[in-house]
Image (spheres, helix red, strand yellow):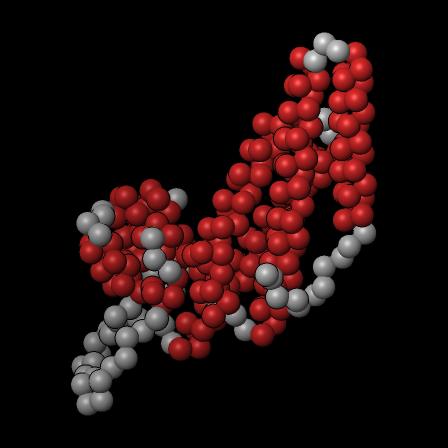
Length: 237
């Protein structure tokens, strides 16, 4: 079974049309049809990856060949055009490229999340902004650990695994910074609210001093964290 036949089988099993898969994957209907019918025997890895995402299956499920039982293989008739098949070497190349794409996606995520964190930590953003960043980052990290962590590692070559562990450690370090920032901002916000309601000048002065101390402690903690550098190759916790 060639890759086009696998795509068609997966699509029809889910009751989806070519139009729907083309729309989900951002491809033209004509291109989708050509791939399924085998007119494009060696589609680009990016196209196959988008189709896999549209079908909700892994890339390896589209490129992995089914084993042929001994004595069951039939030679094609002379002059007949047999179905295009992806060789073992080609399949391994596609899987390796797909892993590289996934790892690079994690690096882009880490870069963007670190920039956002630095902005939130240094500027006077409201608690709701910090909460929004904290929630979205932790949810995405949880989904990665639950659904992607093990399958991605299982497909990694040694050099890819080292690269993956490096970016995973960056994400884990950021996780350890995000929660204290959120908690500190929440405590400070509550104290500020209480301060605004406090009428006794003496108590107001005490609360004001406590708010300032908490803010300074958070700034010192952030400055200390900046001096840390991740250990290359260390496994993420």
